[in-house]
Every structure is written in structure tokens, then in C-alpha cells.
Image 1 (cartoon, rainbow, N blue to C red):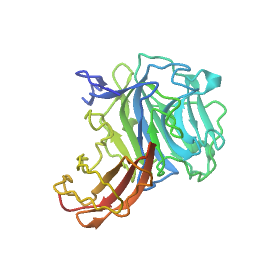
Image 2: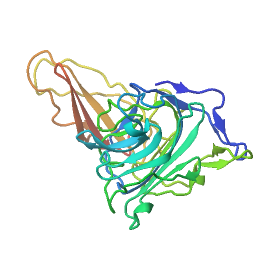
Image 3: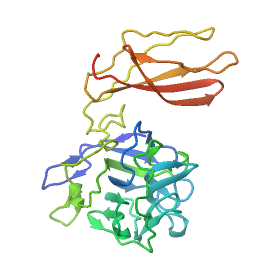
Length: 328
């Protein structure tokens, strides 16, 4: 998943803002995913991105080229994507529980692999009027839907939940319906239904929709702004008050159970009032038995278990988190 970073991709002559980086997704294996620690607002959110397609039609695995979505478990998702089987995968479609709880798609087809486009997906299921619950803007214009079926009032989407939040792949499986092409300036607003498309772009002197520098946005609990300006940290969000620090803490071989492993000299990064330290610990085994961690602490502060991943052959990885505003 390389970063595409020429001297300038595109931008606004009026505001002077230029998008300088994008990621290229290969349409078959590449994607980004995160599992939030805490659920945010599942009924109200805004997703915006700039993209350019390369996988048109049925490319990208099974039907559909996913842009962004959340996992409902059991392979089901709430998501925005390019199409399904009946439209050749070129309509923009937002589906809820894979369509069983709502399906809203555009009348227009989007098949130009040379053009950048700005897609804004706005959801507010608290609205009493069904047509106000889902809106999609393409290049600043509110699109027309083809026989829409809106989610019910107060429907809890999988967006901003604690399951997979995936860019470029079906969130329910992470193995299907990959997006092929470029993405830039990817933004999620947790808890805000931003129906003002001018927050993300403007018309230039030639009537072309171009990006502007986003400002005045409310990101909420799980919101993010991905500029892809660091190749080693593609998931770094520019709206974060702290930047992640990655440290390899060391390794040790144990021959029996009930061992204590202490690491000293680890770098925790800059102290901050809202800082959370995430620790990944695990490895393989040479004999039978279950490997697990009973307790874990960072600088004397007890950590909380997040998740456990078994990768076969006895290999296991556990993830723990701890709020750690002080110490470095």
C-alpha cells in the first residue's frame, strides 16, 4: 500500500490548499482497519474522502468496491461502496446490515478512472423524516437516489462501534470487495452530520470542485483526519493531540508457566492528559498448552485487556491498554 506523493496532486487556487499525499490501494489485498476502544455516536456521523478509481466494474473480488464501513459481526456491514451486482459496481451505494436494514444508492454511475472525486456520506438516523437520515454528496452536489430504502429512526449503525472500521475492504470479512484506486484526505466526524459540503471543497474559477483545508470540524470520540503524510504511520490522524510512538520492548524465552517479564527503558512518547498506551505482547510455543497473560502494568499502572488473536501453530498475540498521562 504505497503512498503516492508527487510534488502536488491537486488543490485550490483560491485557498492555496494542496493535497500532497494519497494512498494507492491495489483492489485485491490492501486496506486500513481499526477497532476503536470505545464506541462513539453510532447514529450520527459524516465521512468524507477524495478518491480516484482504478478498479472499475466488477474488479476487486466479489461484487462491490468498498470505500468505508463498520463490521456488524457475522460478516455483515454498514458501509459506503461502489455498487453491487445489478449495476456493474459503478453506482455509489450505502447499505445498512448489508441492505436488510436499509439500502440507498445513486442513480448516477461513476466510471471515470482519470478524475478525482469528493464523496461525503452523511448519516443521522435520529431524524424523524427518513430522507434526512442519509445524504450523499459528490463534488459538492447532493445526489439523487434510486428507489431508496432508508434505515429506521434511531438505527444504530456499525460506524463508530468497537468492531472493525475498515477503509478499502468489506469490514465484515476484511477479505472481500476491495477498493482499487487512490484515496486522500480521509475524514470521519463522530457525532456530527455535516451537510455543508463546502467544509470539504469549493468550486474553482472553472467550475471544478477542488479541496480546501478542512477547518472548524468536530471529530468526536472516534473521528479522524488521515493525510497519509507518514509512510510508517498511515493511520496517523492529524486531528490527534498526540502522535503515536512505536517501540519494540524486547523478547524472552520461557520454559515454564507463571513467569514475570519486566521491561525497563521503554519509550512511552510525550506525556499528555489524554494519552493511552497500547501494549502488544505474545509469541509462539514449543509445547502444548494455552498461552495467556494474567496481568500487565505500565509504570505501575494496571492495563486493561483489549483483544486476543490466535494465528495458528500455537502463536498468540494479546493487546492491552492503559491511560498514562504522565511518565515518558
